[in-house]
Length: 263
Image 1 (spheres, rainbow, N blue to C red):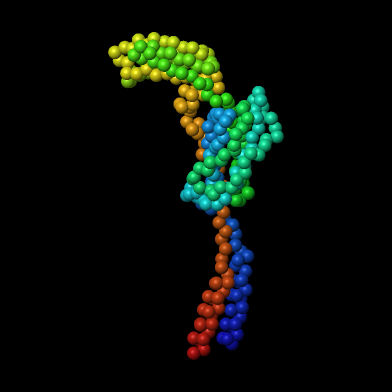
Image 2 (cartoon, rainbow, N blue to C red):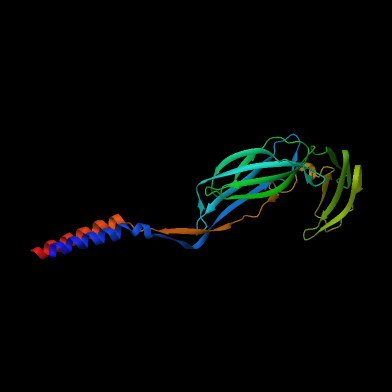
């Protein structure tokens, strides 16, 4: 009789445990991960140089750590005329990067003169897509000009091949003062009258295309940069019970218990 009870118990427990995986449920995690993405690009390029930009993208864990998985990047652009993109946008770059905090440089080659509206599309392994936009300009090369300091540096002489804007500053250690400025000139002359507090005098020149000091003092290499984003997504944890393993343990326990009672 005890043996029959043991067998019935084993069958009941086996059936119950075999259904445990089917009772598994999904529960929301305690935190959020994120989709990070960023683009860095100069605001201006010369017509004889390649246009480049840096991209960064990845998913992150709850702790904010980058997940090393592929992220697709697509770059599309259209010429802006009177502030309106000339659609359709043309795809100029497609690539897949490994998700990390590292920046990846994309080279889309030389582009025509004008202002370009750019759309960057990031695709993540879970199917989520994020789009960000920005603009850059392609212009002629910087205007050539010559600066000469004469009469022991008191006389400033500037000659340019095209119109430029000149600003002359005096540096006095704790402050900087604008001494003189002139716009849209090709010839410029100024006699400097330094004071006892004058430490140095320097010149800022901007040409008709927006290049500053023949590009040597242009804005930071990556002047445009999207803010680093971290769009949140819920972490889902699946609570699955290993029914097969528990079933084996239960059978071993019942069989051992029955053998001991028979002894």
